[in-house]
Image 1: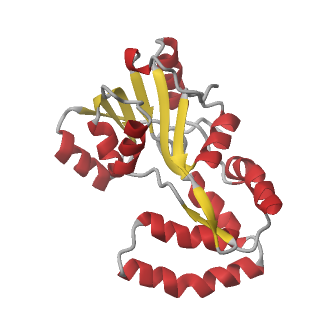
Image 2: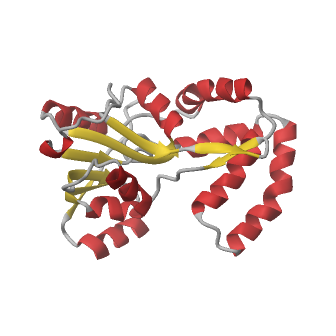
Length: 234
């Protein structure tokens, strides 16, 4: 698996993939944050104390990145760097072993096909990059480039820094020169990724929820193909 950027990317077909609910069966960040916020009574108490702020943030229509920062700060406040790294190291195994998150076999097969064709495979996810990287490594998901969100220090905790979500996914791809001529393939389950699919010539919607499917159809009509991928048999 390589995360380096090929300088000849523009000469290769580009395939873009979302991660959560597209290549894997759940939201890895949500599972990790829930674990971090409930792992002891002190962290639970801190989370409860911050709930009025969360409700106020919803009322004030804070951005998703800002609201996520509240939870991320509550999950990490007071942790030493070593303790934070230790919990990070355990995160992928918790998500996979305890929460049963899997890679979709059809998604892995599609990845294998793109790689066999020499396509440049890019995973673009709202998950924290280190978490997405560890999940992909543990589940055997191979790629050429992985773009994800990042966090930063803030008053003894961590908050969202670069948020790889919605239109910002396309912005980050453009900033890194990864889709100078657009993409050839794009896969996602979420209507938040309409901007991502819009820059691709072939669009694939994975297991869309009814409200997302309506938005996809309104935006793309019949130019997006719906694919139904399933978990591996237990």
